[in-house]
Length: 206
Image (tube, rainbow, N blue to C red; front, side):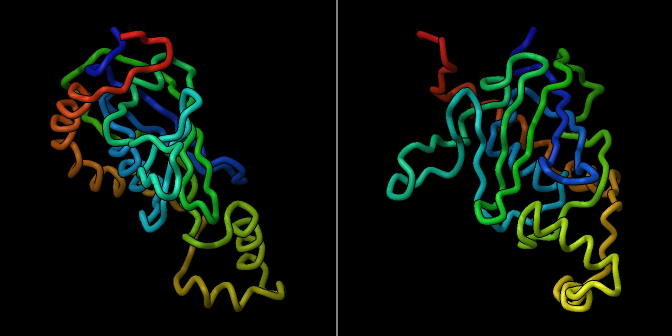
């Protein structure tokens, strides 16, 4: 039965990247979008230094500031199962409104709760997360071309800007799971908050 106790297997694709940057995760259905944001930051490799928002059911969810954006709904009381109740459904996630990193979160499987499934967990993934503030998808593509070609006009400048070795193919699933393991106890509290919430999915007249 699909609901708060379900376990979701999701694929997270960073749109526009070539080769594609992606992660496969398992999370509880009652994970709030706010907590999912934190999980995505860890799994992808972002530093959580910019704003974010989710797109689902024709609505946007994120940090509410009525003085800036009256159309934003809070992501703290909306759970994944509220906005993605079927296999194949997708939720959009944007990180850093300047670089506009767009992620597609697609539901691959929905399983009954199973104590043997630790959530959240990263099952797999490919490619490193782009460096923060590199200019979005197009800036990242240029950066990769430049650092790979010593004759490129910006090779030295961009290597200096990076300030560290960067392997675009690197991804350490074990390292991600070490960090995600620290977030597992908090899911019980998230479940209580969701059940007290008042979000009604479209079509729900209650």
